[in-house]
Image 1 (cartoon, helix red, strand yellow):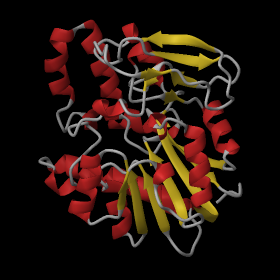
Image 2: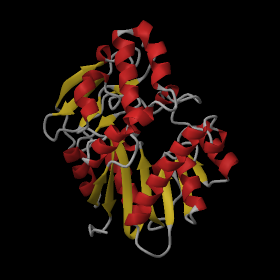
Image 3: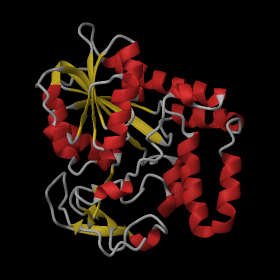
Length: 317
């Protein structure tokens, strides 16, 4: 991608503050994706992986257009019945994970990076008080207009929220996108009521996908993914914010994340075949033939994405 006018910045490690990193991949390793000059590096002191240099906060918006894939419309607008069922199942998995770890009493949830509000709508239907934060104006507007949700359009640190107001703060596929995970988690911890939980869902470093696809792994996704976490660095960031991990779960379907890595690999190695093959792989019913395999991988904790639940006071549920 030729982005000669793109403003870049060079951060230090967000976990330990060191300015000492080794290069893992450069923009040349990610055809059609990463802006010229960007690279994924790994801190030599603590192991945190991050994009350096990276687009500035003022420049990153161009990589989140209104048709960005995670900005999904309401489930009721889905054409295929099987996809409506799959999407409802996915949201139910997320809701049940949160409900399992939140103690009885008042139930209030903040979803950071709430996109078009699908998860918050699911929680509202289950009787939760809901608030959302979304940086993209079009997605925030959709969440407000379609579902009537209370969504602040902007950054977490700028949202007018009261400390101790929430029983759960969720980051569904979001923490890897923020400019300072340490600051975001510290703010989330402050927003929790006593015994509340933070839930973070991220690409799973310990998945077969990462080993199989290497530099084409979807978990890199530059420049939108500013960080890549392994279990050690994510746990260190959580503990640094006063949060203690109490559960690691692969609860989300892995098939579609897996084929995103296939698409990246095809676009780099066989671009002419990529379009026809991806149309086949995205047929709604195809995934059911391999669903048992992905279910088994999830059960071992090696699915494509993994969720960690961390409690403010460190006590297990």
